[in-house]
Length: 296
Image (cartoon, rainbow, N blue to C red; front, side, top):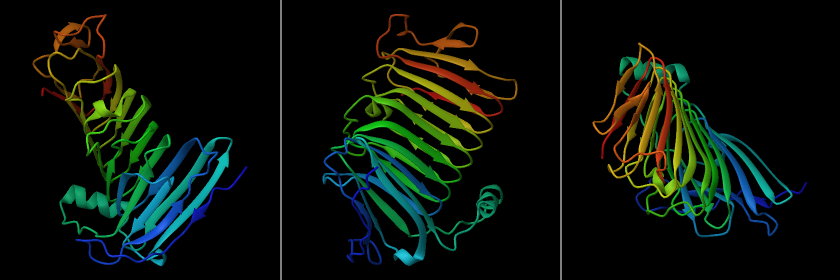
């Protein structure tokens, strides 16, 4: 078991348009023997950004906070050709979950924080990402990265996932898994993820999955909705779509006009057939929540 080269650096710099000093907090250098990375990042509070980087560092993190202003735990190791990095971040003096719930239920004004972490990943190394957000906001840009597996869990945070520069994932992704408890999650341009399987789990929160662009591979979307809302944006009518929904009398379903019933709890558009290529196949369960299909 070998340790990776890690540096915790405090380099002062001022970013345009950002108040305060932006400092480099963590950096993990790439080892020549590191062929893939397993990164587990947990941010209990605050604002977190993930962006691609053209340098070779496995992980680089900047913040406008001083290191003594937040708590963190950090570990890393290399086993064979896999580098494993675990990082947990938490801002001090933040409101608890009960306060967040009160804000959502009673509509009290929530004061935004200007504290952030900016996380940069290299484009040259394959990643398995396990991202866990508690409170706050997360903006994840996966443009041009090499993601093998992606798992995102949000408690009461608001998460946005997309491909800002329009560059697709460099390989076919095995699994794109997103889970929402009481927060919200928006995943845009999912065709660029090139994921064979998309897993969506909604508790009490809200999730939007954007499949509005033509997929390059067939996608199997497995979804479960408790008491929350799942909105699915469909592509053009030429893309084959098959939907199977296991529902209950307590739920609400809103299907687009293009989806016609073809069997018990099964719906398809006119483009779908058993031999369809690059189809979107949905297997969904809903209990008390709502599922909405929107046409492009």
